[in-house]
Amino acid sequence: MGACFNIAIDGPAGAGKSTIAKQVAAQMGSVYVDTGAMYRAMALYLLEKGLDPKMAKEDPAGFVKQVETLCKEPQISIEYRDGVQVVLLNGENVNAKLRTQEVSDMASKSSGVGRLRKRLVELQQDLAKKTSVVMDGRDIGTVVLPDADVKVYLTADSRVRARRRYLENLEAEKKGRDLSPEDLDLDAIEKDVKERDERDMNRAESPLRQAEDAVLVDSSDMTIDQVVETILNLAAQKKGRPQVITARTAGFCFGVEKAVAAVYEEAAKGGDIVTFGPIIHNEAVVEDLKKKGVGVIETEEEIPAHADGTIVIRSHGVPRDLYEKLEASGARIVDTTCTFVKRIHEIVWKASREGRHIVIIGNHGHAETLGTMGWSGDAVTVIETRGEAEAFSVDPATPITVVAQTTFHSDKFEELVAILRNKGYNTEVNNTICNATHERQLEARELAKRADVMIVIGGKGSSNTARLYEICKAECEQTCFVQKAEDLHLRLAGTEKLIGITAGASTPKNIIEEVQKDVRRTDF
Image (cartoon, rainbow, N blue to C red):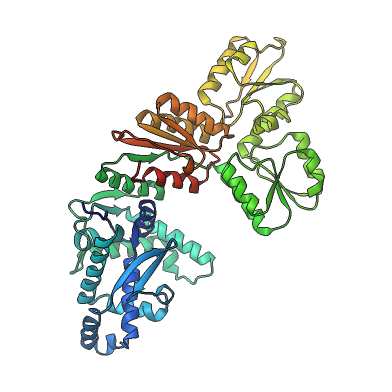
């Protein structure tokens, strides 16, 4: 390997090559080579030199001859300026000129000229000699970059690729684009996909095929993030560096994602907007919302000051009496209480009216626990520790209803419930730990067992992230708890094979991506 590290991604149409390549390049700090943009830049040059695209039909031989002569002259390259990809034609930034219909027509007509294709391959190869690149297409690993450090053949089942295009077309139609009936016919799209595969695989020049040393990646049942991570780990192996695997369940759960999205939507409308308590336990998100004009109130006394504005109830929920005061305040109320939390409120409200004693297994002082207590009447006890469970005592004739904080440690919940059951009470147990939380904890444990280093990302005030840290630490001694990439100070021995990453339900994707990129840096 030389100083430059190059990745070639080939595969059929609809496999997601461009989307994947762009994200891999961003994570690697490499240049994503948009080969299509280079063809457009060449077409722009031909137009500027006075070549008439009509000539392709009126005088095909003459058109080809002129293209062959002119294509030798320009220098075309790609670089990044302030994070934006810039296409350079003889040193000039031509981004603004590449998307005209005239350029598209010329690119379509000129790209079939063999010598032009050869010239662009030379330019692409020259670029790959000067800087690390990620390039996608149909002949990158076989023709353009036969010596690429990593070669991937990215594919997917034809039905899956057809469905992806079908969904893209549906979105385009919603935005007002005129589409033909065939564009919205899944079977017709799949037929077109198969026919294009056949053409690409059997064309005379540079046919689509998997290079002998390329790794086959089938994205049919994979998310974009999973495919990106797979390719990045192939690069890590090639460089002799540890693989980085991120838990599939890392980051925002459904309830948090919905709540945060709702607040950003309200912020976009403007006006007086506050959340009752931080919308989630993540300082970075709360601070970003503050910059967008979203405030935070913590007490009932602050409610009247926002009677003419909007008050958002966070996903943790609020006590019943507070909910009623918010509704009576005159403010516009946006309730983002998690669906699973609402279910717990319904359970304890009903059980309390039936005369049952409520036991909440959760963290003292946690916003969700406090909210649930407010729907439980007077007969309620919060149990967080084994000692508290062993000390719990009520009239033996009193029936008990047990619920759990949705983000509580699942194993610890079972342990505390067993202690309560052994006391002989008439106990009704509702395991209300969110399925997403349970899955997140299970996956974190399994990943930590395999990892040499484990990184847990989340806010310091997030109880579900604290649980993840406890679980991972028990399985992997070198477990780090960070809020953002700047907190990470890894010191590796050089023998590590796997670094695992997971994140709490209140950790946004961009922070996870920043940590991922930092972990893959070269200067440990």
